[in-house]
Image (tube, rainbow over all chains, first blue to last red; front, side, top):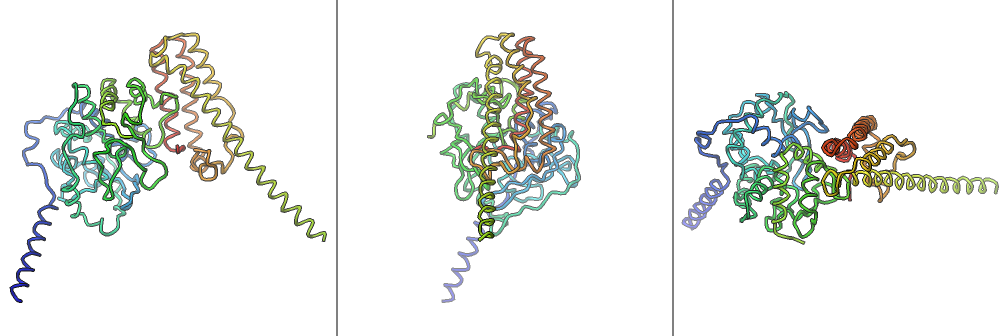
Length: 296
Length: 152
């Protein structure tokens, strides 16, 4: 009988050990950014391609105010309401004190400088495919943006989702650094894939999610309901989206649909970013959307 | 008996009154959606040129830019009755914030006016000017739609 309890205790310890191992926050090697030198102007284009301001600017900020990344916009979901934190250059309330490596760990590993998992509302499941050179450039550009001393608001998330350690298991189950579209016919589609799957994190809204809130990669960009709201994100695959590449590129530039209606909601914010991209990048995204697997 | 008659009259007039109000709101929703359609139609002519899907024609472009300018200056009086929003009317895409943040709506409307003025000046000049002016109009449309419209 005593042996039985010893065995049970051993199994429990092993289980805890596995849990602890699987859910541990993993980071990049310390020399991951060695040899990379920052380029501020490239960083600005990364900044708009990655859409940082769309979520981290203050609610309703427009124009120059979009560069003050004080946070405060809220994002309702099935798991609670997430509130975008201050990522301005302020060293205490913002992320001005972060090294480039700390930013790279946040964006590609979903881990904060104090070793905690971020919630995947921060799209690190997309940013994990970003080039580290882009992260280094972005870090340099963000340091030039204004500081805000507005404190970040706590996340409004209930049990058990408030146990951040569990996110390690979520990442183990769902976080993939593989491209969804494996083969690309030319460098144009390859660039488009990088912008859509990595920096632009289009799939975060346009791909349906499973019960645990992970993107269903086999229904990539097939659209889905808007969490906590009415309506749905449209299906962008060739099974539903029949706009020509020229129409898509023009939509990204001006917000005009082929019927000359205009983009609304969060997509209008995305258009503001895309309008700042190069015509080549807009065309690349349009070209990539033609080769996404069709979902009806 | 007299009281009952008065009561019935009052009730009937209330019902008739609210039905009348609904009709007015529905009419206004139709009218403002028609206005948006006219914006889209005229923008379409200019936009097809901007996309170089059809050849640039200075005269036609000027005519449609002129239409846009007229549309942007059209009086909006009566078009947006209080309560004619998405919550009460299935045909409406207007969010209630339009009424609670009205000064901001007026600000955004001024941006559209300026963009329409700029288009009116640019459309007849050359294709590059027209293409440039489209971007500002698209921005003005989107600025309002991102916060005040919810499509189905």
